[in-house]
Length: 535
Image (cartoon, rainbow, N blue to C red; front, side):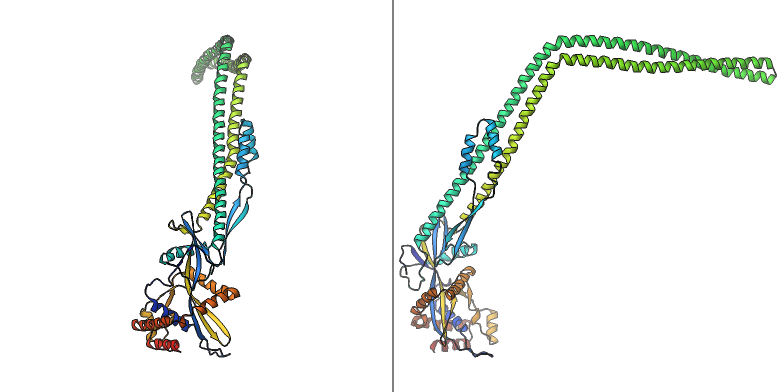
């Protein structure tokens, strides 16, 4: 084993203390249960012999990092890749921004040129941490499990770490550098964002001041021009007001005469109508009396009155047409006067109109510049904020590699115990790995199995931690693929074979009797296991 200065700790196989007898007997019982008894229908299988039981420990490095603890596989069987993105240089952006920050035209051009600076596709990078185990379940289980650890000073059945402390320390130092670089980039990104917003706000305020100043200056010129134009406009207003009044009065007088004439004619028509009715009655009365001459005379009067009425109606129609014509003429003449008035006022006020148009054009241009500045700044800031969110996600991933632990001050090695059980059959050797477990207490189900003559040994051990159990299973698979590692395991197991240890054998016997007394094992199972132990 390599020598190193880090403290070493070993974890218990199970949580119970001072239960060596139960542990030894449970492991032996499970080892016997998994031993092949031979047989087979198609081909005869050889009977396996239990030749070895050894308690070995798997090394895990625990390294402190900023209040957390990172777990590294001591056998360096795994690698963990941290993914991060290579963002566009905030420093280059900041340098260009500071150079183009003034004047406003340069700043606007800078924003337009850097619209997609932080939105361009970013290159993905990977940082490899050799041996790091970052699985959440594993971290949680080790965080709880390590509280049971005991420090050791004279290791014996421990697998030597192949991943050296110096290698891990160097990797963590590189990780610190990478994190520092990412933090620096994040800080510079935030400064870029702050400077952008500050500069834009300054220019928006500047434009608002320009709008106010332009308005004030233009209003002063407009007021002066209004005072200058006032005598002429006043004169024109009086002149055309007088003309319009005169024209209106003339037309109104003419129209009024038409109305009076119409009323007079209408009265005459109504009077004639009454006469006609009276004449008709007289003619009718004389006709009844047979006064032909008088009848004829009244009928002549009727015709004469009807003719007069017709003439008056024609005159009424003529007056009506004249009224309409005069009204149209009035409207046309007054409209023409108003147009002349407006034209002359406009001519006099042309300098004033020009001032107002200039004022509006300048203010509109400034407002458009304001809107444009906000519009072209927006995608640049959004690109920075999106990059900051990505960096925050990456930062969280970097910080979530270990479990919370502010107590660990220096690197240490924690060994996870497991049992290696060896079997031989003819010239073949097979090994079974048993991960940290706890003894299943006898319950109604297991007692019922015993009453029915069924084996209860399968229920003796229950894995304590799923992810730790998976680690031991993977170790067994790795040993089958890697002959050098298998050789190391075999040598260590043979050197520390507990079947040759009298204390272990005594513990097995004592533990089997305890299991029988509490009903975990039947008497037949206990006797069978005792015979196998003594054989």
